[in-house]
Image (cartoon, rainbow, N blue to C red):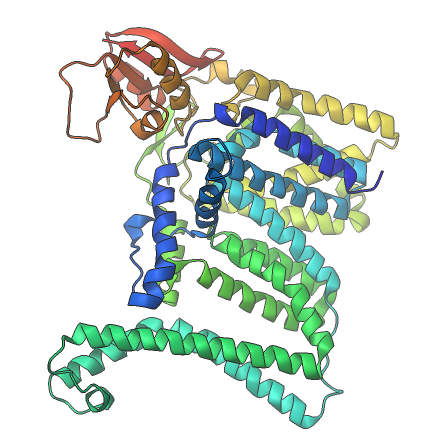
Length: 595
């Protein structure tokens, strides 16, 4: 069997399972706001060249990168015309396919340091974690970022392998001069004309207003009707002209540079083409989450470590192309690239989440969590074999330091340093640790080392299968709420009610809506506390859904739907009869009451 066949079979079977269970998963709390942001970002591709404006603010989630949600918005609209399923489920399908792409990338990374069987074992253990499997269907941010982070590393390491020395010694002096001039022009067109967009707009505004006031400058000489037209009209007209001219300069210099490379240095052009896709992928990943450049830093470290100075030209091109891709896929940056990027970096590094975080029965501010927060959650939300395998694999890797040095360095860079930083820098964390699941893969790669130490393939497969059992059983028991998984170290989900977070994204409201749809009389009034839209999107059209976020109220409610998060089930209609509970084990996620 060829090396690629096992992972392809696993991915195909996983996709089949995903398709069969797709309609079980509800919408997540953040879906609506991200859909609106995606629509505004897509609209910017029309308003920017036509009007010179991007109608996106911080309140529209502008500080988040929109590349993935835009792709999902476009893809779901396209598939909606083909597939006989609702838009929410189409989005969930795209989320899950993205997750599977990340699983493939994880496997390719695993085969870099592990045998095929051990890499398959590590991949299966990673993929079947209930926490990750549950997020894969309904998380529009964190699991997609995990997948693209893995893809960036996978293709980044392949790029490292292809790096070769670049030399222009064989070129004539005139050819070298032409290349230098075109490269300089290209860099100017990329950085000067695009980076200082806000400065040019401010200068243009000042010139137009000065000319309007009677001063003589270049605008007063070319704008014949300035006295009859509002200044804003000329500001917009000339700014749009500037946008088109700089795009033309960028495209022209890019074409000339590529042609010159093709003519004088085909080997350099070939090297550039091998860099192109990994760089685009890194830029896209950065436009998903601000942690994207971290994947690039890992690649830069290993490129310099293995290739030395000869990697610098390739890494420079890698960085520039990634920056261009990030810019092109993040419309909020366009009016003020540097200012808005720095602003986004500050906002996302110190995200001011106003809610309270439930941890071991106590509520904390998201920036004042105890130092035990991450260690405890990492310990109780992954299946029991994971940490045993990680520790065993780490010990074995240290013993075999010479052969395993690169993997140990990867674990330190990708897991240990970020993990410690998140703890001691008091980074804002909430919804357990979903924002940082991208640092989990090294745990499983190191676990693969433990699998590899079993030399008999049959026993290796048996051992891997045993290690997969807790995750598979947990997922089956919790479906479709796999992401609320807690292991036996804390008594599983039945023992964590009101101690740890459970259905923090309210996806159980789909099941609640489906239940109410069956029992509610026509035109029934439903009071929904918490994320009411997650209920309404699956409710019958005749049902009247009311929530705290709306002014309108009904005189009487036939049913009350409320999540147990924040103890809302205790505070809303506390004396009303509970007619239905959505629960897994003793853990109740949502209740339906009848006043």
